[in-house]
Structure formats: C-alpha cells, structure tokens
Length: 249
Image (cartoon, rainbow, N blue to C red; front, top):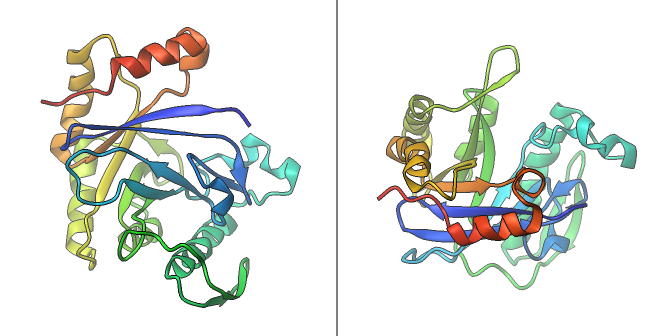
C-alpha cells in the first residue's frame, strides 16, 4: 500500500489542492484523511480552493473497473472483482454514506450492506452533504444516471466494445449538455479531468488544459502517477509540487 500524490487545481478559481493517501478500506481506494470512515468503494478528495464559498471537501467515488480489480490483486485478499457486482456495491455504499451523513438514525439492508439504527456524528458542515464526485463512463446511460444523482463527474469514455478512449473537448461538451439538461439538483456540479502536464513548460501545460476548461472542465488533477519512477523519485515529486499546477489565464 504505497503512497501517491495528486495535485488538483480549480480551473476557474486559481486554486491548488493536494490529495494524498494510501491503501484501501473495505475494498475502497482512499485518499486523504479519515480513511477509516470509508465504507463504500470511494475516495476522499481534499482540495484547497480560494474564493469558493463551499467548504473544500469532495467525496470522489470510483466505479467498478477504475482500479482494474483483477489486475490489482483484489481477488487475492477476498475482494470482489466482478464489475457488475462492484457497481451494485458502489450504489449501495453511496446510499449508506449519504444516509449516515444525515446525522439521523439510519437503517439500510440490501444485498451487500446492512446498517441497523446507526447515527453518524459529527455530521458534515456542507449542506445537503459533502459534494460527491463519481467516475462516469460516457456515454453509458447506467453510469451517467449515477452521475446525475451527485455533484461531479470524473469522466472516462467507454467504447461500444467496452474499451476506453481519451475524452476529447468535444466529448466533454456533449456530456456537459447531457448533464445540464437532465440533472434536477440545483447544487454546483464539477467536471474533473486528470492527467500530467510539464511543470517546467507553462505554455505547453496551459495548451493541454485550456481546451478542456473551455469545454466545461472545472477541476484538473495533476496525476503524477509515474513521477516517482521516471522523474527523480522523491526529489522529483517535490520539484513538481513546487512548480505548481497548470494555468489557463
């Protein structure tokens, strides 16, 4: 269970967040703090956002396949790896999570999770809840219906044959229109993309994220997954952090 680091920047508010973590809880991949509270396949995202009136915490839920379960050894420790089953577990887990966040006595009994008369305290400061980002497989309608119930999406494009492709700005615009037309909640909604930009070339970095911002992306996660091995180990990571996130202005 090794450490990793993400840098997140809000593309419209000039702010920087850092997300770190290790391991998983109950089969959940977790970032950040309070990981012992995680009961669903999800991850806690903590970002610092200047000028944003909402408290700077989001809960980002990972769908089945995001961690490529069979390839990560989950089966060796008794974790579920079937994608359809993990999808059910994700939906049920999010039901439990939001129910517990209410601060009221909560009971829930379905296929995978069972809760009897539990009151969770302390409750989140945010209202109606901590914003939840879910990974959405565009344009799969079942996955997008989950997205519509929550507060943000980390989109990935799924082809008809089940393979994945890069989300283009055109894809993002189409997906954003779909969400805007169908989402009934009036709370803010984030579109989150991740990737890697060169910290020593601001123009090139901006050229990567600017088309995404123009298409409607609100958060960029600088996912420096390979840096420890390919860019100087710990010192390389420190250098990249000091260089800061890409800027679009």
